[in-house]
Amino acid sequence: MEPEAKSRTWLAPAKINLALHVTGRRADGYHLLDSLAVFTRFGDRLQIEPAERDAFSVSGPFAAGVPLDDSNLVVKARDALRREAGAARTPPVAIRLEKNLPIASGVGGGSSDAAAALNGLSHLWNLDIDEAGLARIGLSLGADLPMCLKARPLIARGIGDDLSPLAGFPALALVLVNPGVAVSTPDVFKALARRDSEPLPPLPGRLDFHTIWNWLETTRNDLEPAARSIQPAIGETLKALKKAGAAFARMSGSGATCFGLFETGNVAKRAAIDIRGRHPGWFVAATRSMEAD
Image 1: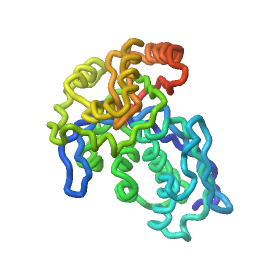
Image 2: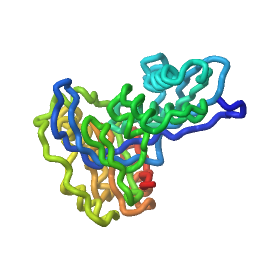
Image 3: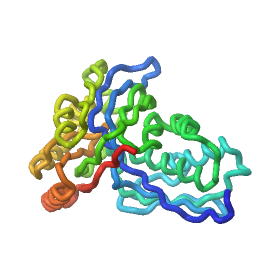
């Protein structure tokens, strides 16, 4: 590690599945997916700095319930990277997680936190592990870690590790809403009616708000009906987004967070204020997705 290394804060963005088709299931139980995912400018934050001894702490509106022991994916990521690089090159660090995203909410919060830890620690420790190496370590922690490491618009296939970045994909104005409920991902997959959907249709040649909206209308989130049967509040969340003027609304991942697509950032901000006023106990955030590099 470079002697001048200092504290730095890393964004752990929300992962939003704009579309998600379940196309099969492997013999080991992993489901095969075809999903268009984007990552938002709003998310959790990790502050990482050199320390006398390892430390991990959590603050923020959703800190309650976040484990502080080695069951936390951030701690697992730190330890996995240390095993890979060796203790001599990976001195103690203090990691502070600011938890701004709801837990178990379908936006990849834990995986994104771990991805930010891998990226941040690799930089702080000045390791010569390339993107493929980090993705391999990430995949050992969770199927969606590799896509969270990229954190740019992409199509994810297989178990989530076959990634195709989407050049030219624009930033989108979004409102994220969670009605204050957690949904178990394994329970959602168990409740699936079918696991053999067709892949996503080809994306349009020209990518803008209108063409993406029209394309989304031809796709689904195959997990949404199952999640709604477990947690009916998801349906109320989608209704609230549509009432606030969303051009398109859908559940992300396995829920219960839903997103609304808006034509401009200002319209999204006004919609977020409206929903917050009607549902003061809900998580509501207006944000933008990150565009392709």
